[in-house]
Image 1 (cartoon, rainbow, N blue to C red):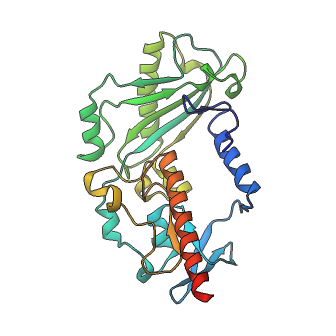
Image 2: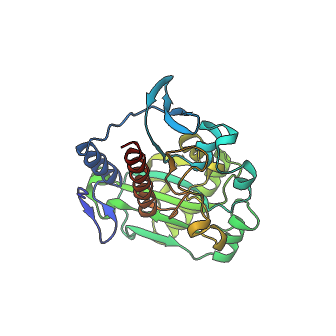
Image 3: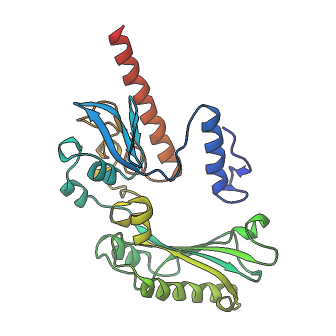
Length: 291
């Protein structure tokens, strides 16, 4: 597979992670894939127990099989009838989810002298922050966070003389989300970054955009606004994760971070491969049975 400009040693593609998506898209098109953009699926259709297609923008597109890589809970609860779902609402409500996160995309009209491509701010109590994600969900009292400055390594992601910053703070899913919360924690993170680099930064911001729980819900239909799928607990690992195959409808499969093998870019890609293998296997069996 050809990832244009991808430095595998650091898993950072020159030009940003969008280059990975672009390369994958090009490769898929070369093998016959057709992409329908701005086309949210409205319904998964089936006749009896067999997939017949999907409804998109009011139009029916026929298919012999479907791999749903959208949020698993959204796929089942919004695109299928109750009797066709693998899991009930109570099943999802009782799962332990990995964190959501508060993200800021920031542009600075200056260069920073003392910063690396990756910086972890883990000087606070890790156990306390973990409890405030999993045990007693609330906005963290003394947060840990991560700052990425890709313009330190890649001159193409910011104008000359500028810096590109990315802040990420893990938080519990489904927290109340609003501008007051976002700005409060941005100031906390920015102050600690300024202290670390030893120079003022806030006054040099010329671009800032936040992304948090409500955005994960609205853009990705992410259950409770989670960012990383299910937590990797003992009872939510391996074959105890949500199933790849729908047990009620033939030729409906699931992919993505909420099924096997789990969250993260590589595991989600692997889940797509596993689902594709299942599609090929079952369609081949049906073809052989007809012959």
